[in-house]
Length: 189
Image (cartoon, rainbow, N blue to C red; front, top):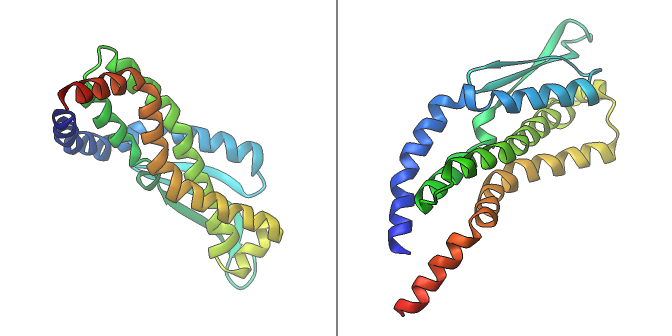
């Protein structure tokens, strides 16, 4: 167990460095998912979703200023804020040293990407429906129960999913490794 923990700690800085610098490429699929979601569900609110580095910019149809239409509202969302669990998953997977580590990393990445997209979309909706102020929020057309749902989705997508999903996914994908680790520790006791 100690060796596994030490290997994980050794892989963490490398995994976080790769994640940080490769974020524009690694998170591009999440932006594609977000684009598809807003074009299907929120086409009346969003004109475009652009990516610049690790920032997703939502260009809305909402107007800012004294009279609506004086300027378009844009919302920037930091993609890294919703994907910090990816390097943790990678470090744990690499530390486990299983023969199928490449496949496990690919499946983990494919599973975590929609979770990142969920958090990014919830952040955008929270910004325009709740924190942008009444002049902007009133233009969205969201009713109170929808704003409450958006607030819940934001909390769930920013506080729980980015931290818990990678750990739960790793445990689910590494049950044979964990069983072996448990058996080794029970023999040595």
